Length: 328
Image 1 (cartoon, rainbow, N blue to C red):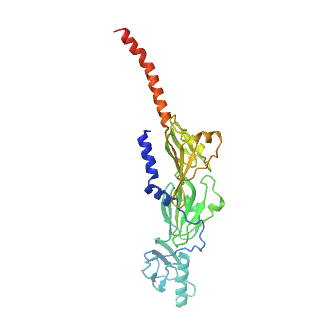
Image 2 (image 1 turned 45 degrees about the vertical axis):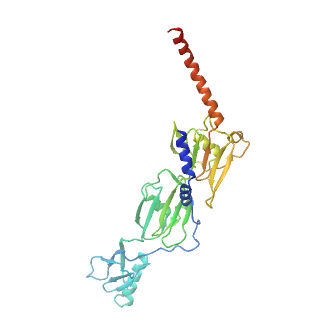
Image 3 (image 1 turned 135 degrees about the vertical axis):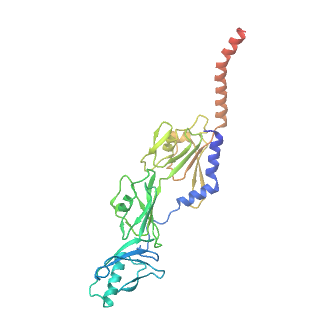
C-alpha cells in the first residue's frame, strides 16, 4: 500500500466525523429495562377478521379496521374499544359485549389478524434474511431468530431488543455457535425490533504488512486475505499484529501509537514500543472495539533501506557497464 493511501486512511480515522459516527454506533443502552414490558396490542389502522360462531347469518368472518379512536364496529356486539389489546384480550372483550348486552349467554369469538403495524416483530442487523413477520404473543428469542435463516457470519456477541412500548432496550449476550438456554428463552414481544449487532473491529494502519480493518474475533488467513472469522473471545495487540502480517522493514518500532476512543468521545493515545512488546518487557494490551494501531515509518530505516537498495542495484549494474567499456 502506498504511503499516501496509508496517510489518507490514518487521517480519515482521526477525523471528527468518523470518530463521532463510531461513538454513535458504539453507544448502548442499559442491559435490562427496570420497567415492565407490555405488549403494545392493536392500534388504529389494524385490520382484523372476526368470526362470531353463534350467529347463523354470519357464516363468514367479518373484516373490520380499528378506527382512529381505537374502536371496531360489529353487528350484535356494537362498538368495542380494542386499541392496546392483544388478540386474545380483544376476543374476550367482544364476547363480554355480547353477554353483557343480553345477546348471548355464552359467546364464541375468534380473531385473525389480517394486517397490523404493532403485532409484528422485526429482524435486522447481521441476520441472513432480515424481515418482519406477525407475532401475536410473546415468543422465545430462539424462535424469532430462526425465522431469519441464520446469521451472516460477521455477527458479534450481542443482540439488542428494542421495545415499541418505550421500555429500555434489552441487551442479550450470545454466541451464535453455542446458544445458551437463557438466550433461547429470552422473550420477544409483538412490536419489538431484534438487532443482531456486528462483530467489533480494529484498524491496523501505517507500516504493517497488511493494513486494514480486522475483526476482534480473529480471522482465518489464506494467502493475503482474511477468508473467515475466528472465535477468539479477546484479542491482544500482538495477536492483532500477527493478523496484519507484522511490521515492515522501515517501521519505527519504538514510536507506534494505539489510539482509543473513550466513552466521553475524547481520544486516548498510548505509545507502544513494539520491540519491548515482543520481548515481553511491557504488557500486551487487549484490543477494544474501534482501536486504531498506527505504526509510523522510521526516517533512518527508510534512508538505510534506500541506500542498501541502491547499493544492490549498483552491484548488478557495474559488471554490465564494465563489459560495455571493455568491449566498445
